[in-house]
Image (tube, rainbow, N blue to C red):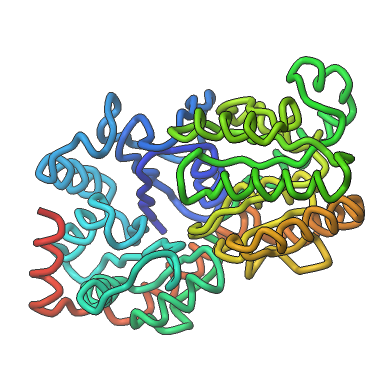
Length: 394
């Protein structure tokens, strides 16, 4: 089976997924642009077991015109001749270009939509949902992040037996092994990275929806409740809000108790996870939250906002961590205390719970959905669907 999988830019997570999928299918990884809109990833070196095409090696996808993007998608898919095209969502321009290409072909190619969207991650309106229903109607199956995303896709008209979980996974083995290696050489690595002996860790872009001012305030309240006897907080990442966050830390008198190591590349991430005692993600909007996968694979207990898509599938309250309301400071303060008091047992449960959420799950789900898609009658695009698709892709 020949499967083309489209992503905007290949980060380490995408490479791990495509590598696993290539053990089951002939895979073409279609990377729209050579650099990411959001992440300063350094491209991992080495050969890959799947074929890869980068449409715009020297730019970002937003810099491409719709015409150029459609032309390159069409030429790439014409050359590969896939049985299945897996697209990233229903509003991405490359996804729309691929849908147009499939619609122009005989009834031999199917679309699988990959999605982590859920009903509560943004404002919904009748006309937008109407458009989405028509786009989703052109797809034969859906590979989703978790149960919330599955329910949303069902609400857009896709049958439950056309949907599988496993889109949002990371290389669990990589994080487990390298976190353990960091712990075995903890003193030297802590000294090199300027990390405290024990700490809470968060990792995200410094943008409003990540809710970092709330997290810092809640951490300050937790420290006060413990008369200052609390692990420091390490905020890994960078972005537009960093100066304001540093000023907030100073105003609260937290000093070196909150540290900002900056953006950390993939090869260094496991050391930060491995030397931490617990992980926290406080987002008010988060379709999934792959950093939670990383933390759990590294053996950490997790505190996760109940607005994060992954919370419903990865966090079992009291077993591997706790969920909390990202608008309720007292709720998070309680979570800090509960995790700090039972970190070892919670962390061991995290490692066990995340085990099924590996790149193999992505590969197996994609392969199973491909069989479902090819066995079903091809979707019939209505006149409204075709007009909508061409309008969106223009």
